[in-house]
Image 1 (cartoon, rainbow, N blue to C red):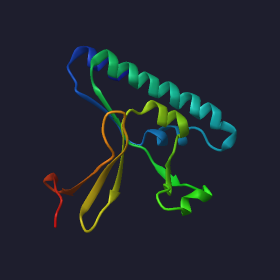
Image 2: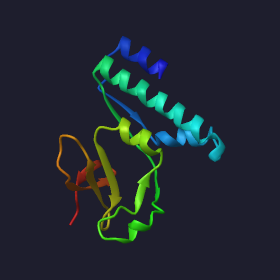
Image 3: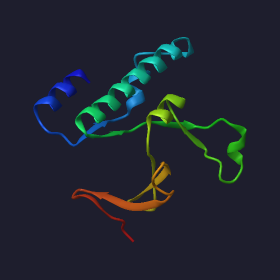
Image 4: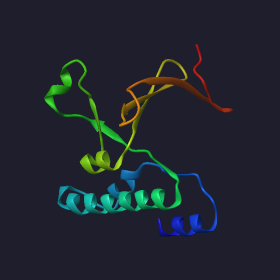
Length: 137
């Protein structure tokens, strides 16, 4: 992130994208014995991203992995069967969370799962060799 800050000081950027943010830390820290250290470093990384966003006026997009929610309440209607890896640190560092899932055929669904300014809603789209397109019927 220090190198990214240096690049942004020299040229104008509009977005920082971090793909699979928690995977960067899952490979460095293994097992429950290192969970505290992993979460501490993940939090530090996310705070640094927030500072870069504030300082340079860029949007930050991070992708993350999810796991099955072992909570017994997941059986009830409306309960979420998936939960993001990274716990509360990821939740508190995120302003708007968008969940992506596969739809019918080639379609994908993006759902605003949590946002302080946007209502919960969904949009369908398709990904093709041309890029992102309207959902196919």
